[in-house]
Length: 317
Length: 249
Image (cartoon, rainbow over all chains, first blue to last red; front, side):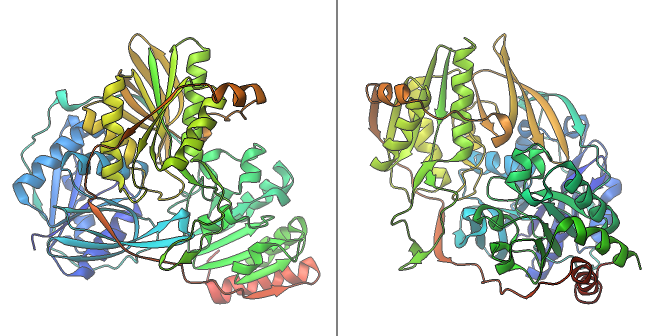
């Protein structure tokens, strides 16, 4: 085999954790592992990838790659694949990762398994388990086109430190300014001290039972105590208590944190689809019949307005 | 200008998924327009109402049943429909090839679609269509301004909000937060019956991805459920979080 490539997700040198998850998983599968990192000046990040087993680091540098843009990134990676022939290329299942992988897959007339939660690789073949219907069912699929490509869901694979050589390779720049077709006018980062919903170790979500901004405030207080992300069910998004980007469920984000706490969420099937693969689930709801209790490790039938303040006090002890 | 909206017919998002003979059971399941595509239909109709475009064409690849999805889009306000008959086992590549072939015949200025389908969750098809047609694309938009042969879009991005511009024609995919799709009016439903829908056979393309098997996710076992005074519950929950989950505060 000619190695597994992991496409790094980073912005301004901040590397998404899913990158390390993919490197660790690729290392476990045994083939040579390379990190491929794009950016204005990214060679300095190589040691970060070596820690998680990267034998090689392809540093693709230049002003053209300063920010993700589909045209230049696809042209460059297609040229590198032609030159180095990796067996498999793994992307993160982020907005950028799926955009990048989809356009590249079509350019190469190749198959692509998106949102994979399990990976098996062999020479010229990949078998991936994908969540379909937002996790209500699973599909095991085979991709045997060249190279084998997939996008990997964040938070599923374990991060394992293992030393790799991290040898830096500087590939020839094949993309040019004429490959760029999206004119990026601005990027405004979400102003939040909280972690990204899809990357967080702990997620606290509020639903209809929060009744309004006061209930959401309690959810946020608990989240901040735990360094957790805040999410919401469709009810709290549609009511305008939380932004759409925080919706957990079938038409929102799928999350699988270590701990998910559902506060005032009944557990409609669309919501369960977005969170039921979390490792630990706790639920606070006044309705003892709420379906959320069917998937909860620890359920509390009580009023969240009374439970959360005490919970915060107890956790601080 | 003309806008073409790609719609996929999917299971209702409230549907319970079950397996039958190793396949996803579809008996008795309500079929809808993929919610992300429905937003794209609404977006296309709004562009017509703002007189940015003068025609909204809706395109679907699928079985004869997908005609219902097209009629729903027509009832919302799209002008005419195209059904490309294709086996629903077509993968993202084969579907993109079939849709792109039909789009090429139409030569629209703006191609809209949902950024992901609620059933297979692939988020590949719009981007693949753009590549096949050699067009620019922008994914996951929440706003659009069309002027001077360009579309300027606000997009949900990883960790923030992006504003990007592309020259038309282009493929643009929607996020559900772009708009609130209208319900078809009774008048719209009556009119939709008379609106033209053409059918065509899908351009031939072999799947690139093979489905080996379907499975249900491991069933989650319900754990402790306690009913007591809120303060008592909270104390027990805190203990569980510290001792079992091992959260650090």
